[in-house]
Image 1 (spheres, helix red, strand yellow):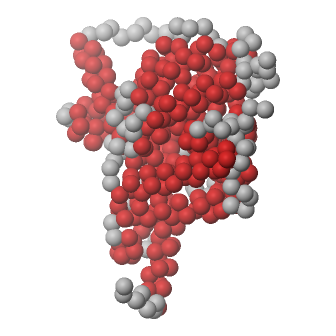
Image 2 (cartoon, rainbow over the protein chains, first blue to last red):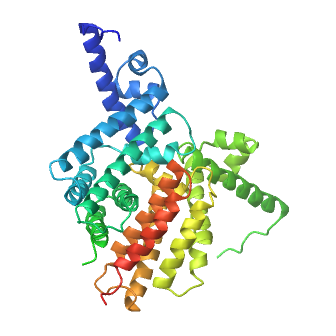
Image 3 (cartoon, rainbow over the protein chains, first blue to last red):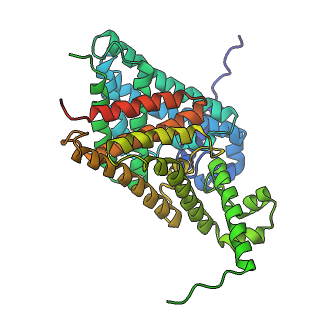
Length: 208
Length: 208
């Protein structure tokens, strides 16, 4: 293995530029989509030369993958991290629903969840961005299914329940909360989503 | 009121051109999105002069609205019409789920459901296409809620259930079946969606 290159002033500046460009790119992608995320449009929005964006990200495909990875980090920070404060299983599934709807209600992204809109855009478009999205979404469904499995093991959910089925049903609620909020505005989406989340987990409780 | 203009050969040809262009536009929108639906790209795909597309639809905004209306017709034909053969209420809600998942599994659109991807694209973009989408989706949620209301009245669903909540939960399942199928491929999405649909309706049955 080679040793890491020394961190000098030029490199630190490069990292800061990259972080700034990426923050702008995530917002732009949420409005215009990953396909609308051109280097020219992004440079114009950020008021930086196109060459800076090129230097930071190389190509549009690299930029798309970087945006998906950054969005994943934001999701982990806002939705998953708070749920890690409670035990795995049913308490964590309940907490992750609360965190998810609070995150969606907070309108962090100008144009709604990037992962959700990227899903519509990238279907039928094989390539690095599609692969990155499949990886993130698989990881997310596995997180939900893993906690469903832990809840079953703890006796909090029905031993006959299918963890992947529960993950599908919970993902459906969050995806649709984002959809409803973005399309119709207001907070009715989150009231409905919270009731659906509790109801879905309730439906998979062990028969008493 | 003025009498309708006589149908002559020129007008009939115009209608045929419009129908052909619209069919191509729906497919293109399913892959490239409504925003990617440019008159130049569509003319190129169909092998017709740009002027034909302009004559048929006028502007990109008119074309977007026409695509949403045509997609609504396709949804009515494939998903709602079959369900009208059974009584309103619970039987119709069960039938509409079956028809919806068969329609999604049939991959009629090259790039997945246009209404679903349009929702991601048009949020935060006020205009005629956004208004047309809100109208179509409101009508769809009202169809689901109306049948939930009929099912409650018939004693097939819990009198304490909220029809709008049931509509949200059913919409979530179909939206996510499309999402899962487009992203991961295969038919696992529809197996999960059928189980979720039956389970959701079951959860809202009257307490026995």
